[in-house]
Image (cartoon, rainbow, N blue to C red; front, side):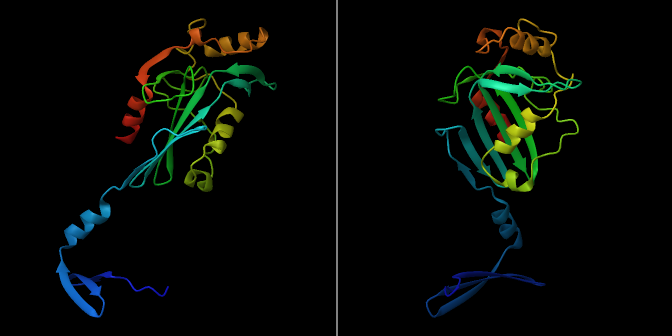
Amino acid sequence: MAEQPSLILSFYSFGVMLRKQEGAAVSEYPVDAAQVAAALSSKARFDTGLLGGNTLLVRQEGVKRTVVEYRPPGKTGIFLEGTETALRVTLPPLILIRVTTDGSPQYGLFAVRKRPSDMDEPLFHAPLPNVFSSGAICWGSVKRVSDTALAGTTLKDDWMMLLGSPFGNHACSGKSKAHPSDIRKQLMELERRKTRVYPKRDLIPVKKMLGQVLGEAAS
């Protein structure tokens, strides 16, 4: 690089020096190491707000990155543990939230009635096993997505990992008004009836808005 830096921090055994160059003039000052540490640890925040398309939001705050993606309703192949053939069921619109800190992802999965147009969109429990009431996902022995995928701002690989892995018998209750004790019974009934649209009246509300959940994820 031909350009020379205008500021240089030099760390010595006796302290920290700041070197400043303005044209031919060069000045050097001692600085407080604690102030340098505080400046370097400060959290710069970047937030796209709600976007168009399926990627709803990308937020970066320090080392924490939040990506929110929308999945439109449609027929999906769902494998249940112990079965060799996938259920072909229609799912409602879904929201997947991935929060990554130092390479460790945490997820939240929720259903919605429609694609969110603002942060006041109400959330519902995703009608799938292995999803806790908080929206957290029980992955079991499923491996996480690659570091390359975690560094990106799309959840394509995360959706594939979630919906392409067998669902077990954990966290099956509280997802359906028709079958409150076991959402798997609802999924099997929907396939048997060849239901084309997931009945939104069957969804159980989380009693939280999208903005509330994202605020909790940021804390």
